[in-house]
Length: 78
Ligand code: SF4
Image 1 (cartoon, helix red, strand yellow):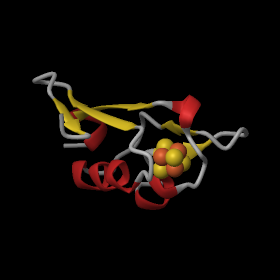
Image 2 (cartoon, helix red, strand yellow):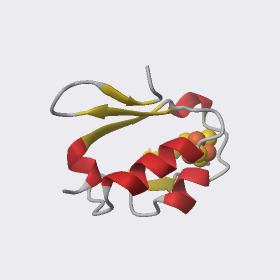
Image 3 (cartoon, helix red, strand yellow):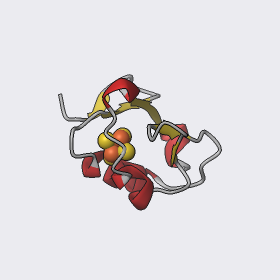
Image 4 (cartoon, helix red, strand yellow):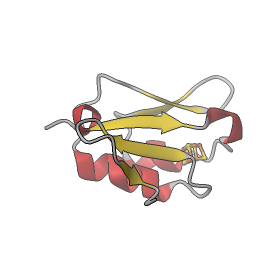
């Protein structure tokens, strides 16, 4: 299953510091815009683990992953 089908991926973009850590971990799922803020690419084919690693790599924990099926927050762990 594509990670993007498993997880709803939300970024608190206002707080993004533009270091690109998420893009390094999952370049098909995260991209930087012209203001150096990350955004999500819904057409990503990367798996769950890559997206989870990207969320974990964010130094300020602003990437939130929610299980689309159960509605549970997967990351950051509640
Ligand atoms: S890792 Fe976090 S702070 Fe860094 S670019 Fe991605 S969302 Fe922004």
